Image 1 (spheres, rainbow, N blue to C red):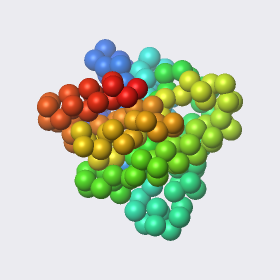
Image 2 (tube, rainbow, N blue to C red):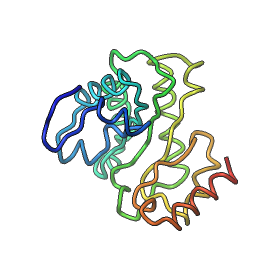
Image 3 (cartoon, rainbow, N blue to C red):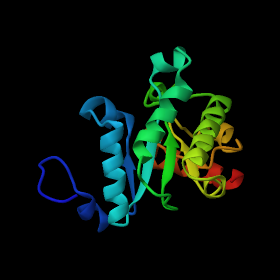
Image 4 (cartoon, one colour):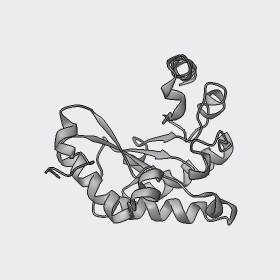
Length: 182
């Protein structure tokens, strides 16, 4: 929650600088060993200081190819939110790991289907009424060229833009296209 940990930053420090925090990103899970339990603690700490957590969920390529997408995202959701009361500031991002930074995005239909599973499972953890308020974003090689395919989908509320956000003209194009659709 607080303290001097070289190379890390506490939620308390972030609360004065930003509104949202990305928690559970695949790079943290892969390279730093963030487990569902660690992600859960980070979400609790973020909410405690008034930060709005964006919880990332997503399967690796081998899990996708083995038909385990639903199993993986369901377990990530359950373990990440265990013991956490519903909070209106929570946002979920579906980021298929195999699509992050690869230039290979899921199809809009694949993303919509998986995000529907996430919404269904969220309703099982909380209830259907609050689930309608939940915002679920798609992330994973989102670009100005493919954003128009994702935004009309029923389960997709927005995008968590990665690499394309580093180039202002591309990011502005994504924002403008999204504004026209949503």
